[in-house]
Amino acid sequence: MAPNAQRGFVLVATLWILAVITIAASYFAERVSHSIELARQKQEVTDQLVEFANTRADLLYRLGTVPITVNGLGRQPVVIALDDRPYLGSGDDIVRLQDNRGLLNVNYPEQNMMARLLGQLGVPIEKRDAMIDTLLDYTDSDDLRRLNGAEASEYAALGLPPPPNDWLASPYQLRNIIGWRDQPQLWENERLLQFVTTSRVIYFNPNTAPPELLASLPGSTREAAAAIVKMRNEKPLYFTGQLAGLTAGMLNSEFLYFFPSDSIRVTQQSKKLPWAVQYSVTLTPRLESAPWRVDYYVKTAVTYPPENVDKIQKLPAQTSTPSGADETL
Image (cartoon, rainbow, N blue to C red; front, side, top):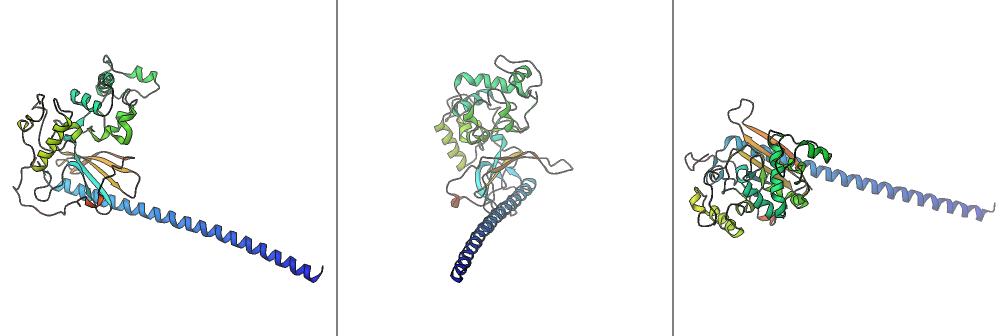
């Protein structure tokens, strides 16, 4: 082979080798960069979970040691409201505490309020009574079917698990009930689950209820609900007569109770995570095992993205407050 041809072959071979090396280097560089990004994301998630755990420990400690008053958790001026308003936790996480007495209890619902709430959430009027019947059949202890209800045979016909004929342990079980599972508007952004509870508390607290439930009271409206929220933000409500001028219907004073319960729903979210965690805590000061009990703990797709995050108040610092400064539960 002529010298020029040899040199040409060597040059071409060298160029090919350099090209292969360049491609391989680019590939490995891209893989390393991708691995670094995945590691960074996992570290962010880990950091956020640590913040969640810190905030959760802080809240559980407060629930076990700080008195619940008509104003919320604690005495003035160090109070955490129990009406689901957002607070900044230990880091970037956002936490909300909701008194379960301010929600509609689906284990023994006030049926007129339930029907009105379903109407606000877009359920047609002709379906509401049947949904209440299927809910009652799902949770009562017998196997007798109500007029529009459903028992084991109706669930078997649809290939569904039979009703437990017992109280629900979590509001998320509503998804399993005939009629309820067929209303997609209830589950968009977990809308219904913001307003209901399965906690074993009685009465209804207008001081901590969301506006949608205040608007579901007999004779109430959205405007009346807004007026009630404005009143309670200025000073907590104490008796039914304070609502008399705002609602056109007769309010059952035996159904209303203006103090928070010993059962609190906690929701935690983060701008760094695509999900939230929600759990319900019941205080058990007389138990030897723990001063509180977690009734359920779920991860949910609902992130409740708040507006104006930079304006959200941080959880107040834990400080001692003088006794007798406020009325407690």
